[in-house]
View 1 (cartoon, rainbow, N blue to C red):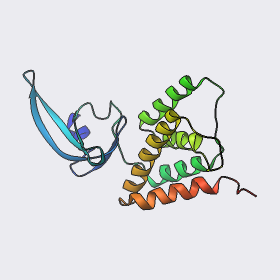
View 2: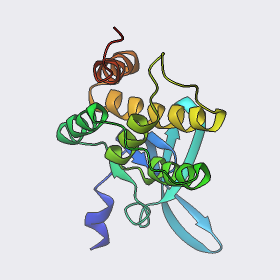
View 3: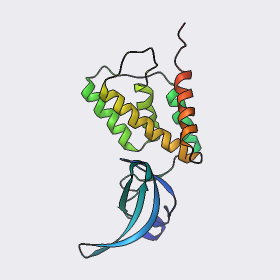
View 4: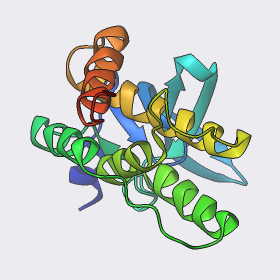
Amino acid sequence: MTKSKKSEFRPNDYVVYPAHGVGQIVSIEEQEIAGITLELFVISFEKDKMTLRVPTHKATEIGMRSLSSPDVVSQAMKTLKGKAKVKKAMWSRRAQEYEQKINSGDLIAIAEVVRDLHRADDQREQSYSERQLYEAALERLTREVAATSGGDELAAAKQIGDVLTSRTPAAA
């Protein structure tokens, strides 16, 4: 049973870790912690200069997953095209929801945050915290889109930017 679970992720695989986005499994190592030998995925998040060690038996449970399929990516792009849905709730409540979506590791949920917080140049100013959430979501989305299509983040950013600007009606 546990053997088949382990083969789901291999060294060099790109994976999505909910709280940190796209990382790459560098190796699988054994480490003794409190007298128990644990098998760990060593995941590198190059952009954040961070390395994470995740027990292999806990990976799926905590929501670590493979990169999204092209279908999910195109669904995320469709989501971006949609009309922003901004609830009338207080900002602190909305900010909390956005943060949960960003850290869910769910690409569609992340795309919803990007869609809802995206501002065209002529729209009202964003608060600092709105901007922070928007940029965090956009970065997660861009990195995963790039990783699924071969790793070109500039191309992914342009693709996302084009989708976002295409949905805003041009100023007359």
